[in-house]
Amino acid sequence: MKKRIFSGIKPTGDLHFGNYLGAIKNWIELQNEYDCVYSIVDLHAMTTDFDPQTLKTNIFKAACNYLACGLDPNKSILMIQSAVKEHTTLCWILQCLTPLGWLERVPTFKEKSLQQEENINSGLLNYPVLMAADVILYKAEAVPVGEDQLPHLELTREILRRFNGRFGETFPEVLSIVGKGARVKGLDGSAKMGKSLDNCIYLHENYDEMWAKISKAVTDPARIKKTDCGDPKICNIYSLHELFSTKEDLNYVENGCQNAEIGCIQCKKLLTQNIDNEFAPIRTRYFEFLNKPDYVLDILNAGNQKASAIAERVMAEVYEKIGVK
Ligand code: ATP
Ligand code: MG
Image (tube, rainbow, N blue to C red; front, side, top):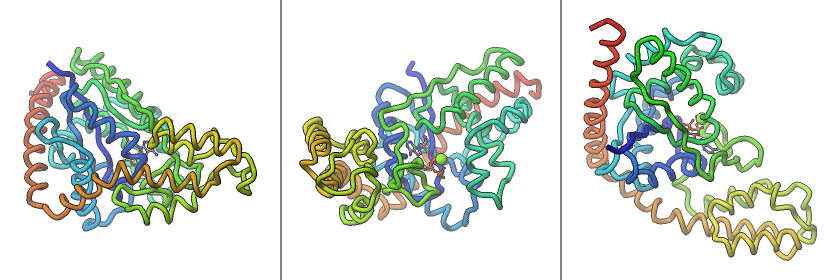
């Protein structure tokens, strides 16, 4: 039997290259090797201020993006978190096993609390417990994620060990799968690229839209004129080249920058072109899926049912172990 993996993205906005390189690209590559459950984690999205209509649209757009990037519904389960009620039931049980101190120490709780001072809700604190429930509900053994999620997965492991310790071996250990694009920086060159920050290139953007942003993006701050030699190691544009460009292009921009043979504009144009080459077909498919809502909703319904079947089995076992059945 194949091992199972679970992963999800919050529908808090349009998907960006951080989500693609940190998560979705790995999801697609892992589809043959693992039994995969890929989710649109809409309950998690509610920890941030949200508008119901926008949430609905974002859920649909996320599904179109996953499919356009190559999620194959014949190989993997594509599901919406809120459609499988066991996520919240298991979350409650796990909350009762999780000391408050573990949650207060989580770095993302501190970060998000600063980002949304007016809305420090308890969902924000309990976020990692819901994530633990998401993963272990399917007895997943690995989770492909970006680096920012590693503290959450550490907590998932602690929570499941506590469950296993108290009620008997039930859930397998969970590994994280972190790829090459583990922490893509935003175009400001400092913060992580993130939906809640205005520093992203979105997956649906065309060449001109990308160029408008990339042309203004921060590079090596010490390189002011084209005749100054640059340092690719501290340039965010170079780190994006590392994720999208061929070895030849990488050598070309590395040498050209270090020896002041090419300027930042030329380097950025090559990057924009390379991203566009990889993404033009994905973008076309994305817009095709957007225009086929019935087709996409059928896939989601089928995925929700498959996920429910697994979740019901696991929850029956959990109920028995904790003595309520
Ligand atoms: P938000 O800003 O609302 O938290 P987000 O863009 O961080 O949104 P999430 O839904 O929190 O997106 O994360 C979804 C997945 O994308 C996770 O696996 C996360 O690690 C990954 N991810 C998000 N941003 C990046 C990034 N900049 N680099 C690499 N991976 C990322
Ligand atoms: Mg995030």
